[in-house]
Length: 153
Image (cartoon, rainbow, N blue to C red; front, side, top):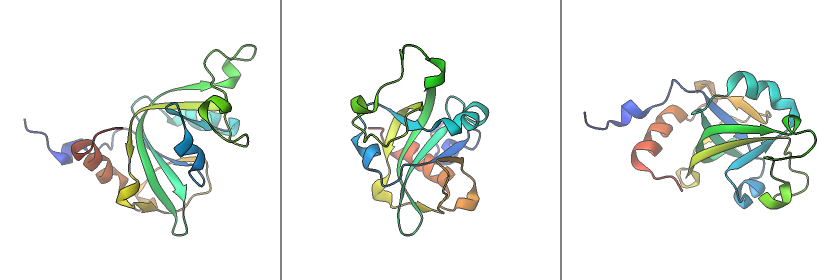
């Protein structure tokens, strides 16, 4: 069967919106993970599964500009390593500012740079949330396009 862009639309996995603020720390990242605050622990436990799609979004005047897309692989939580952090990578090694949250690290693979497409969705003040068509931007179709036409970095 020939590869079809409409077969790639991923609506079975959850799509998550991650607000990366001004995007500075996102762009400076050395390793493929993003840091979240400890108050997002229940969201990650209840809603995130391997293979889910992560949409990294930067604050803009019009809403949230989508600047990256990746696939979730796993997480490390500082609460799981109370004495000696074995897996948690410090902010300094990730090249982040000291005010960056890093209690939970969500790791990903197959990162795509989506900045040139100028995709803008409705703004949310949440650090991470589940995407729905209410946000606009039809990220399900964009996912299919990136997987069909693009190559991860």
